Image (tube, rainbow, N blue to C red; front, side, top):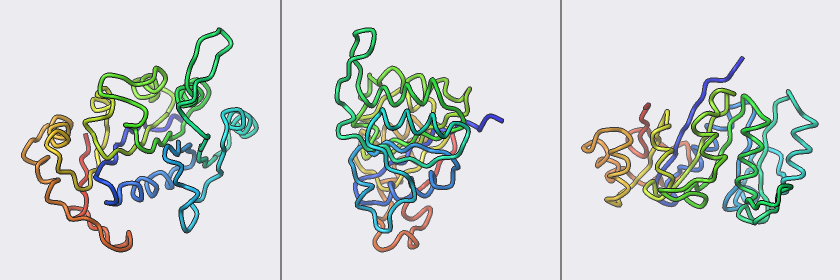
Length: 215
């Protein structure tokens, strides 16, 4: 059975709690790969319950050995933007090849990407990320991602979102991006009034610290 596709963006300025909520969401799924863009997961206390893999070769091998099984993976190579030479002589990046692996070989999985703006620009996204976002749903592939600055990520992702979750945002250009995504300029402006989360995640209150929009 094909898993229902989701494309969820978690946004908010630094240290508002978006990554914590992102991890809570993805931990509820049975099969996921998190791209640890900022190499932060090893610092988490308590540790996040997933296997850490640090090379593309190890990732291919592990997934082949566990085909059809559930898995929880943190992918943390040394540099996701390292160039690699493919068999046909062309060049790619570890990030794009990770997206290619998910798109061409996997199904019913969530790909989590921390800090999408580190991998995309408004007018650009790596080829296989584009394919994942636009047609990965045919194979039950969902994408969860985070960003501090919505205006800096690939514009094409906005039109594919199924849910937008935002903590505090106040930059005018980011709020304009949100207004376009949720089609409500007045509602988007209220994100500037959200309170920063002080204390444990258990103190987080929907509507006070963050808002959710089903799209």
